Image 1: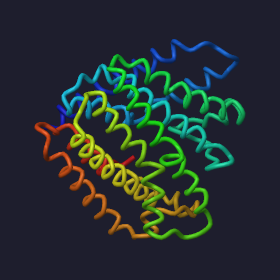
Image 2 (image 1 turned 60 degrees about the horizontal axis):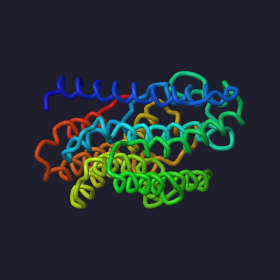
Image 3 (image 1 turned 90 degrees about the vertical axis):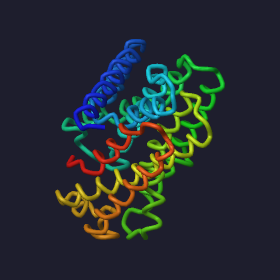
Length: 284
């Protein structure tokens, strides 16, 4: 796929997601500043990688991406809740997110916690609104709850906190990041396949693709953090501190190649191949 065609479709997907997220927000009742706080973070933009993955794996497996939009919104709502909670003083204690004050800096810690809780809970309600066969909706809820919960993203966050103040081995770091970052990326890819009614073989293939790009995404994040000195200043465990800069760069390339290979059985995986390369080569 040519780069300009890839970029055009990426922007089209992002537009679909943004419009769908705004429709979700329009259906919420207003309770004090809770809804405003939820919208503040959910509608703040960002790369929207996870919902785009839902749409594109659905397309790859022969489904209609528009019908997968509720699943894409649900993933992004859970991702957003996790960012709100990660930024809290009890966790990463960050003041800025996407170039503006974090949720708790604007609305206070209590409202930020509840905004995250609200997004997490509402996400599963949004999934049930998908115009898909009931068994696919049930599969989607099961998949997302598994990958977002204690066996996935939440488990990774607690491993991250438990690892503070000590050097992690490569194996420990890989497990941490596979859960904290990779689980939701894998869920996004699998949800698209579920929406399309894909085969078990297809689900395994897109999950392997997502596993590889999720690891590459995190390592590239670590490389970018190294370049600005933020990770060293915060004494964070990263792939760069464990492997070194050159080995980390080589591993990004290796994982990107594995992601491409995972999709070799599909007829036209061009967009997802371009996406893997774009994530591996990003500078922010």
